Length: 163
Image 1 (cartoon, rainbow, N blue to C red):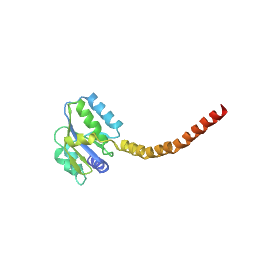
Image 2 (cartoon, one colour):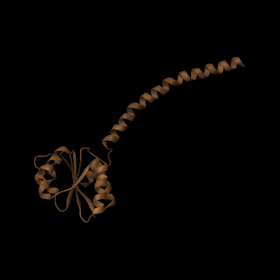
Image 3 (tube, rainbow, N blue to C red):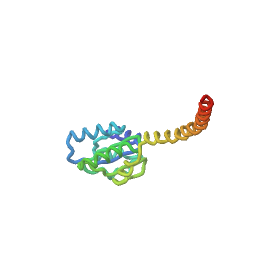
Image 4 (cartoon, rainbow, N blue to C red):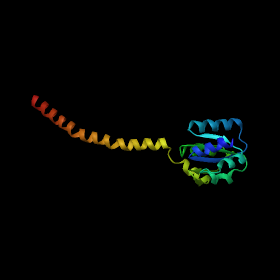
């Protein structure tokens, strides 16, 4: 278990520590499905094993946050796990965000909420592509406009002469 958790901490770029006291099996299953759909993972951890696995990782600052019934949400996308967990915590009071860590930088619960409001990596890529394509589209419209206006003028002269 320690080696598996250590591997998780080695590959993830974001880890969110949560406490989930009193959640039913149905609520936990719902949360796991939402986390999985966002491309992240959710795992209930044993505090002692998690603290051992955190040693020599960029998330070692989270070791003192593992108290009580804890679980972690983690992802390689810097925003995915935070978005889902923060949204679920707003609708279900049984889930509380304890702390988070983004590539070695510790975050409190408010920091995780702030991170959740940022667009995901895929959304940022889409916006960047849209920004890059917009000038080209506008350039094509602007360069095509004089030609179409000339064609209309010539067409009007042609109709006038035919009449």
